[in-house]
Length: 130
Ligand code: THU
Image 1 (tube, helix red, strand yellow):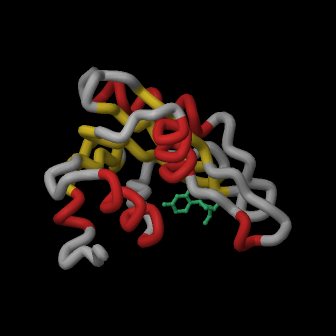
Image 2 (cartoon, rainbow, N blue to C red):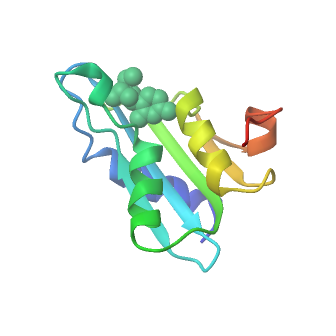
């Protein structure tokens, strides 16, 4: 599974986004260390704090199926079907990544025609841990 394929899986997942309040659809595709892909979309709620981001949906699907080791996640997002700008993960999702992933875990974003790859330590330095 290369980066472009993972981005495409994220894009497909974004089609399932439930985002009636923000109109902002997000899709994520999480690649486990054994090559399995878990997808997720954002799922909003009228009680806004109950909303779950696409990245956390993907992580919680994987962990709930007993998968704990991950190599990379691709994320796309945007309004009105426009996914051309990069959609970096929010702080809560970065913290969830830090719970399960090594500092070299890859976060893959699409910015226009370009694919940008960051590590978790790029996006979340000085990580909190117990
Ligand atoms: N959202 C995500 O799915 N992932 C993020 O990392 C940031 C934000 C969703 C939550 C909400 O449904 C919408 O984007 C607008 O904030």
